[in-house]
Length: 158
Image 1: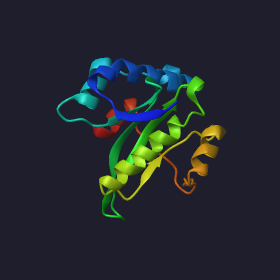
Image 2 (image 1 turned 180 degrees about the vertical axis):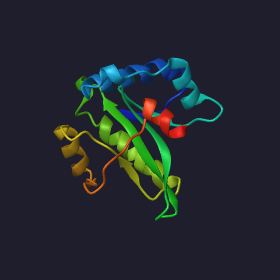
Image 3 (image 1 turned 45 degrees about the vertical axis):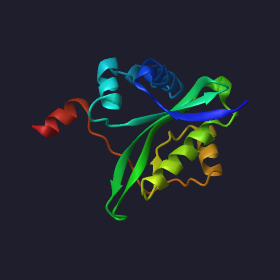
């Protein structure tokens, strides 16, 4: 029973969408998923990819994914990796897929000269919080995420 990590290919698009929908269900945010398959595919695999995806396979079957992109730290003067989504199907939790995905992301961060790997987690998600802390992650409690989207984004842009 082995876990392997691979970079996603365009043929994985429907698999990725399935993982995104399953993650949204787990996070109680299924109604917030508005993605368009073609647009997502273009942003992941088009001429100017905006994000990358790693797939975790367990015994040859896909069981999880990590979607990430680069950000930048002005204080460090170097890029970082921001993990947007990490998800492992419930029946494969405990086989090491989540840890393997994070290990690969840490390797990529070092290979690419990044200063950090960071992500957000919902406050109520205690199992994930405990898992992340066991890997040495620390909460950035003094920071609050702000978002402008939808109509507010359009208003701000005008």
